[in-house]
Image (tube, rainbow, N blue to C red):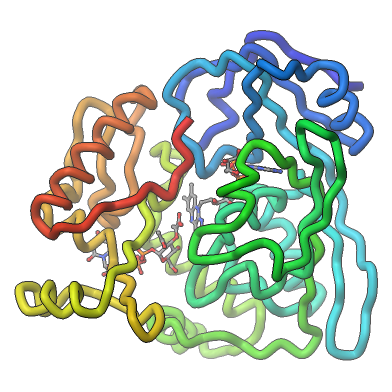
Length: 337
Ligand code: FAD
Ligand code: EPU
C-alpha cells in the first residue's frame, strides 16, 4: 500500500548515518505507484530527491521536499543465447544481490564489482567502477521516468554519456529522471578481467580462477581497504581521482617521483586522490566526529554523531590544502545535498 510519510527520519537511508529528516517520504514498490506519486503529490515548486540506498550522498540539512525511494524489485531474463544473457533488473534491487545472482548462474561481467553498496537503480548514475571494471561495459539500456512530464524514456548505452564516475543521469538529468530499470548484457562464457595488480596477487593466494574466486578476491581486498560500515559512517571515496594533463603530471612527478598515476588516454593521466590527501597530512585526522580514514585517505568518516555540515567543512579544508600543496582541484564524487 502506497504511503506518503511526513517528517520521516533519513538516518537509516544514508550510509554516512547523518541524522536529518525528509518533510515527505515515499517508497513506491511498483511503476504505477511511482507514477501516482509524481502525478498526485509532486508540486512544481517542491524539491525532489531520489534516494536509493544512500551510499553516495551527504545530507547537510533536513530535506524540505519529497524524497522518493524507488523500491521496485525484480530480476527477469529477457533473452539467452549460447554466448550472452540479457537481464532486466528493477531499480530497488540491491546491487550486490544482483552480482551474487549472476555469479551463481555463471553469468560474467559484474564479478569485479562485487560488494559495492547501493541499488541497481543508482549503478548507472556514476557508472560504478572498481578493480579495472565499470558497469557501463555490461549495460544495454537504462529506463526511467522524467519527473516533470512523466514521460518514460529508454537510453541505450551510447546515449548515457558514460565516463569515469559520470553519466547523463548525474549531469543534465540529475533529480529530473527516476531510473526504474536497467537492462544488462552478461556473458555466458566469461573472460576474466584480472589486470588490476592487487586482484592478481589476491587471486594467486586463492589458487582458483572462476567467477566465485574473483568475487572472493575482491571482497578480501575491500575488507582490507574499506572501513567497516558497522563502525563508521562513510560514502566510499569522497572525491574523484583527478585527471590532469601529461605535462602537468610530468612537472608534479619531478617533485614527487612516487606519485601513483595511470594513463587515462594519450593526453591525460589519472592520479590517486587518496595519495594527494595523505601527503597533505590528512590521513587519520579528525575534527569532532568528522574524520579521514587512516588506511585510505580518500574516504571521509562519521565517527558517531558528525553532522553533514561538519563533514562538508572537513572536505572543503582538504580541498584547499591539496590545492595549496599540489595545485590540483579535487572534485567531490559524493552527491552533497
Ligand atoms: P544513493 O546514494 O541513494 O544515490 C546516489 C545518487 O544517485 C544521488 O544523486 C541520487 O539522487 C541518485 N539516485 C539514486 N537512485 C536513483 C534512481 N533510481 N533514479 C535516479 N537517480 C537516483 N562506488 C563505486 O563506483 N565504486 C566503488 O568501489 C564504491 N565503493 C564504495 C564503498 C563504500 C563503503 C561506500 C559507502 C560507497 C562506495 N561506492 C562505490 C559508492 C556507491 O556504492 C555507489 O555510488 C552506488 O551506486 C550508490 O548507490 P545508492 O543506491 O546508495 O545511491
Ligand atoms: N593511496 C595512498 N594513500 C591513501 C589512499 C590511496 O597512497 O590514503 C594510493 C594507493 O597506495 C594506490 C593508489 O593510491 O597506489 C590507489 O588507491 P586504491 O587502489 O585504494 O584506489 P583509489 O584510486 O583510492 C578507486 C575508486 C574506488 C575503487 C578502487 C578500486 C575512485 C574515486 N575510487 O579508489 O571506488 O573501489 O579504486 O578500483 O575512483 C568509490 O568510488 O566510492 C570507491 C570506493
